[in-house]
Length: 96
Image 1: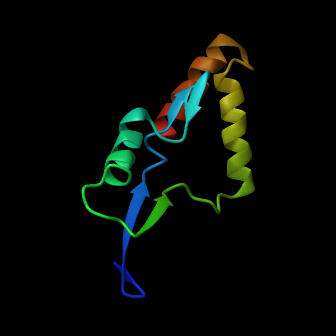
Image 2: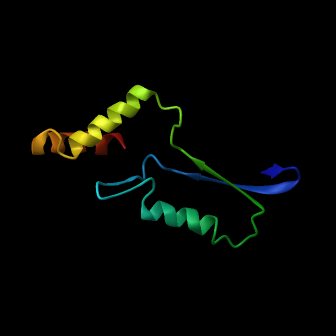
């Protein structure tokens, strides 16, 4: 990709399917995905003049869906007991 005659290196980070969902250690991308990003940017074998990082996270997520995700996170953390936590975690894992 060229921008004003200079090389631009785009790198898309898949942040929806590679989230680390451990309640004690949450991350937008897991270790494998982050290693890929580092290998293709910081550790690149060719010079990069301009780096464009893009995320697949939908930033225009409707507020209702945001609140639904927060509710599911609370249920998965045990807000409705152990049975609710199992169901909530199953829903959360299926969605991500």
